[in-house]
Image (cartoon, rainbow, N blue to C red; front, side, top):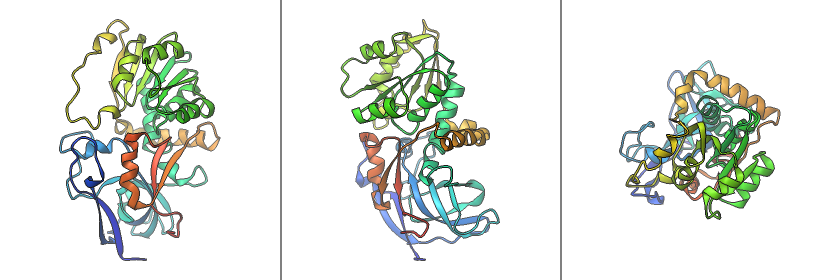
Amino acid sequence: MTTTNREWILAERPDGEPDLDCFELRETDVPAPDPGELLVRTRYLSVDPYMRGRMRDAESYAEPWGVGDALRGGVVAEVVESESDAYDAGDLVTGEGAWSDYATLDAADVAPVDPSVADPEAYLGVLGMPGRTAYFGLLEVGEPKPGDTVVVSGAAGAVGSVVGQIAKRNGCRVIGFAGTDEKTDWLTDDLGFDAAINYTTTGDYRDALDSAAPEGVDVYFDNVGGPITDAVFTRLNLDARVAVCGQISHYNDEEVPTGPRKLPQIIAPRAKVQGLLVSDFATRFEEASERLGEWVATGELEHRETVVDGLENAPDAFLGLFAGDNIGKQVVRVTNDAAGE
């Protein structure tokens, strides 16, 4: 095994939209595991929109990265050396690690990966944090009922694509917003959405909603914010529920847009608007993982990963999230197999 490790660090804080100058790839020594730890080699690492908030020097629900700190996120990794009775060399695990070739992880903070259920990269998407976010965000915050109309923004992403499918399982009519015809076709043709709206080619979101959801909106799962959310708020039904999961259209804003201008739209329908963090449901993660795993194993829940090859391309993969490059979950493949090829 090599003794050299590559690791991405935050080189500088972005002003507005991040660029490659914000990242630096440095060489370090491969770390040694302490008692209770695992030395792992990264197979796949996750890039996620919420990481943009970690690049700011400001309080947030996720701890900010310091300039010079290693970037961190979800990983699927192979155990190289174990100082724990829970795992052996060769096991695959998932947890939070550095954007690096090698890392040490506390054995108590990882979970096993079962390739017989799904490909390993799915454990960063439908079987990982995004899948659990969709599961709890829709079922616990959105509270869908059979016959409800559910609208999902960012519907072709890692969270939104799972939200829509779970809503269909619950007997709902589902409409998704996405940014290309390829994505909208995937939503309707493969995932079973009842309708999909290409927000880049649609001139009037309200008119599009009137056609796709003529009886109004009962549940809105918001990943995006901005003009799409403004339009959906005007079409909320009585006792509608809005689950606010993300606001990617604003993540690179240096100034908060003037508002809230649309709150009057929730008075008449007495709509509930609730933000959500998946960490609030940490004691129930096993429940979500079991159910999502069952649906994936039986083919009832479709998933897709956009894979970018090479640790050296991790910043490009992250920046691609804001350009809409991904369909489903965006991941970086660091090594191709357990041999590290």
